[in-house]
Amino acid sequence: MLKKCNWLLAVCCFFLVQPAISKDMKPGVSLEVIDAYADVHSGPGRGYPVFYTIEQGEKVEILTRRPGWYEVRAENGRVGWTTAAQISRTIQATGEPADLPSVGYGDYIKGSWVTGFSTGQFSDGALEGYETFSVTGGYRFLSWLGADVELGRLFGSDASGDYYAANVYLEPFSDWKFSPYVALGVGELSLGSQPQLISFSEKSSNFNSYGLGTSFYLGRNFVIKAEYRWYSVSTDDETESLQAWKIGLNTFF
Amino acid sequence: MENRLKHIFLKPFTVVGLCAVSLFLGAESASASELKVNSELFDVGLTAGIINLEDFPAEFLVGASVTFKASESFFLQYNYVQADISRSTHEQGGLVYGVDRGFSHYDLLVGYNLFQGEFFAGKGGSHLSSLYVVGGVGDTDFGGEESFTYTFGVGYQIEFFRKYVLRVDYRDYLYKSAIISGEDTTVQSNQLSVGMGYLF
Image 1 (cartoon, chains in turn orange, blue):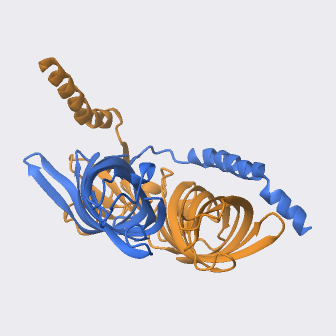
Image 2: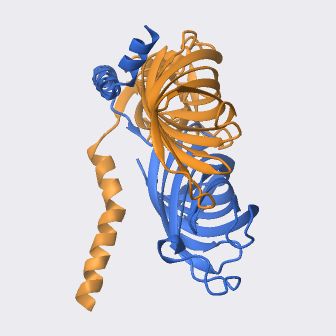
């Protein structure tokens, strides 16, 4: 029994100590600050108090990145958080995304992974009134070009279903805070009955779609999207058109 | 012409090709950054708690979650929870059988850190903490029904040793169900849970 407890204790200790070890083994990079100055906050948020100020010419070690913030260790050993904007010029030389006013939103997130979800409703066609949501995962190749894979569900009063799709997004003015985009997608949709209606059988059909939307950059890594989509679904003998509006949230990492 | 285009688009290998191109381009630009800064942008975690489906007894529940930090104030969270629900007092002779007694739910939420702060556990320094609200949409699967669900909630989290996130959450699930009443009525199910996440 005692042996078992010891074993458990050892496992717990390992998990507690392990992050400390890995931190020591991965020393941050030391940089000379070329920005005028940077306030050091006690946490990564605007409300955390400023307890120190790094001056130009001082050496800092960059420890951790969070959206909009870097954790730094100053020469005198003080550890705190500075905004990515305040040390953007220092950071820029390293290849990290630099939060300079001159850097457009699209440029900041290019080369990042993206995940998000959207929700909406079908506004026209056979599925009018159906509610839908989907989760996406993708990649932003260029400031104006992205792609993702989408998994979604549809809910209606007498049927429900799933769909999956692959989408490409073209966003030509991605340095704007409000920026329009075009979406193109292909996928497969399957519909089945809810338990109240037994006669309905599940069937799947391919579709392609295009959409027009607007991105609103709430932050460097956070985007709200509003979109209208036109779907054309190929069933056995005909093509069905559907339309839907969607609102989505996406984060880049 | 239109038909031919459609044919090309609908071919599954077009989809596979798209993915391959994305991976290739992804690998290309990932090497751009020389600075290897340790990012703390998402955490994965486990959840345990109590769920109280409307008209049914409260039950133990387990689940998993992934959270993405989107900005200093916002985050996105994907949750999955499941439970086995025992018989309701409204069920005379039983309305829900077998696998349908299993409750499962997943949702996609956006969260806002309302009160960010620090938690002082001892002399060892401070731990980042936050009181947050969440809202979103999801799917609830119970009693043979799958329902579009709105989720609302409030929670509090503390980051211990910077890597471990301890959460206490309250969630409210709103969806339509016809199990008890026989016709679609909006029901409200409540969940209280604790979660532990690992940040990386």
